[in-house]
Amino acid sequence: MNISPRQLRMFLALSESLNFSKAAEQLFMTQPSLSKAIRDLEDALGLALFERTTRSVLLTPSGARLARMARSVIGEFDAGVKRMRTSAEQEARQLYIASLPSLANVILPSVCSALEQRFSQPGITIHDCTNNASIQRLLNYEVDFALASVAPSHPDLQYEEILRDRFVVLSCGAWRRRVADVVRLDELQALPVISMTDASTAMRYISAAFLQRGVEFRPKMQLDQVGSIAGFIKEGFGVAVLPYLGMMPMVSLKGMKISSIADGPLRSVGVVMRRQGAPSAIAQAAMQEVRRVAQALMDRHPHWLLPSAPR
Image 1 (tube, rainbow, N blue to C red):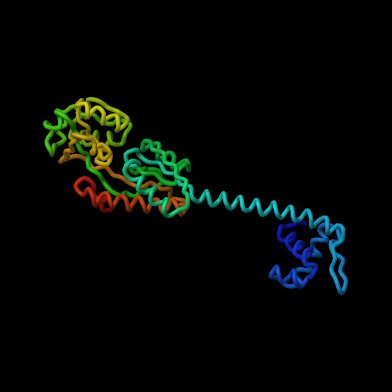
Image 2: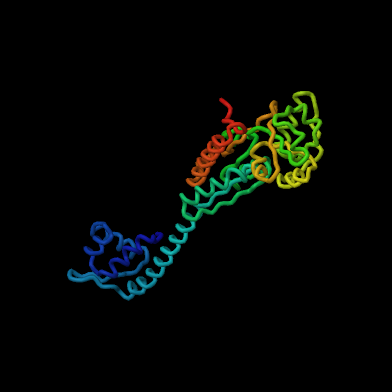
């Protein structure tokens, strides 16, 4: 027979009170139930733990030795449970998100700030990476959800579009004067366009828009990082064509100008989740905050950011 912590607690309660009625009351159980539990423990150990008379209950020498060991065992057990509980509470406050860098930059700071107000010392890890890498991290259970710009076709994932953003032209210096406030895709072919690399979803969107017109999009230069693109734009090396959310961190730079693309594509922005399993409380709160921030951005920038497409 296995001896449970509950049995040891009952034994310790009786060893301290040496009174079945008091021990049973302390344990919120009946006296006969306690008497049976003690007999079962003695049978399991093959030892007499108490000397019982009509007037008193006393510990036997074996019972006294067991009491010392039981206090140590229960103390270690309680400490272990407390450590596990603390670890579980800490894990419940852990949040892992994968996101395109442009979305992480604009959306997630406000999300994380709100989470810190709702949860005590949350541990938040953000992987800012490509769209494909974000989806793969979600499939590998490395993150709770992902912010992406292309709906994945994987059957285990679901995509919730939260907004759409326009592609725009960013110019500076001499190019600022030469680029109109509104341009068309055909006019971009005459401009020294700097874009993201072919691995980016932004490049795929703009390339697809040109292919629909039977034209191959050939930028002057391609870079991986938006910050690097900003440096070349400031130097007057060319103009950038990017989604508006990707442009936002650069708009405040001195001398920058945004021009809209009248017939440009719209980029989808959404939350990717696993179909199976319930998200943690902090993950659910984070996704709700993402939706709130997205709505606030649309309210502030209605010309550039649009609601999700009707289903």
